[in-house]
Image (tube, rainbow, N blue to C red; front, side, top):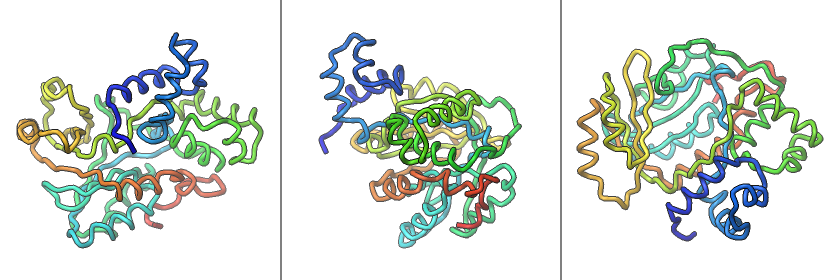
Length: 305
C-alpha cells in the first residue's frame, strides 16, 4: 500500500466531513470540483486510511466509557490482548509502557454494571488501574439512559459506526428489510439523538504511536503548545484529566515527549501495531450486536466474555 499523503488525507477528510453521506457526484457538484479528481482521491484512501463513522451517543444508550492500564508481562501480551478483544465491551487494546507496563485499554460498561468493572479487569490481570473517562470539558451531567431499541438497531449501529457510507441497498440486504424501512431507522436514530452525526476519521495507521498523560490539574497551555499535533483531552471525574497525543514513529519527538511530561504526573507510551489493530478491528466490527441481548431486552453481562 503506498505511503499516504497527509495533505491529501486532510483534504478528503474536510470534504467528507461536510458531505458525509452524499454521492461523489453530488459532492463534486456542490464543491465545484472535478469529479474524477475526487474519485481518484476517494478510491486511493477511503476504506484504507479513512472512513466516515457514525458518532454514537453512548450515554443515551446507558454506556459509560473507561480507560484502564494493565500490568502484563511481555510474553503474555498477545495472549491477554487476544482474550480482551473477544469481549465486545472492549474498544481498543494496545501495548503500552510507562507508569504501567503492559496494555492500555479503552472500553465501555453499561451504567447498571459499573460496579463490575474491577471484576472484569481482574480476569485479565492481577495489577491494573482504571478510570471513568468523560468528554472535555466536563458537563457534570450524570444521567445515563439504557438500551431501548430492537436488536436490528444493534446491527444497524455496527454498520454505521464501521462505515456510514455503506449503501442503503447493502444495509437493507443485511437487515432483511426494505430501503424505506432502513431510511426510517436511520432517521429515527438521528431524531432521537442516538446518532449525533457523522465524521470522517483518519485511520490509526497514520499515527503509530501515542503518549498518554494523566494529571490532577489541567494546564490548558499544553493544548496550545502542542496544537500542531493531534492531542485529545478527557476528564477523569474525581481523578483529574487524561491527555492523549498521537504521532508517527518517523518523527523525532524525544524532546517533545520530555516537554509534554512537564504537564502531566503520569506518562505512558502506546504502540499502535498492525497485529493489535487487526484484533481491535475484528472486535469492533460487530460489537453492538454482541453486547445486546438478541431479544433487545438490554445488555449482556460484561463478565460473560
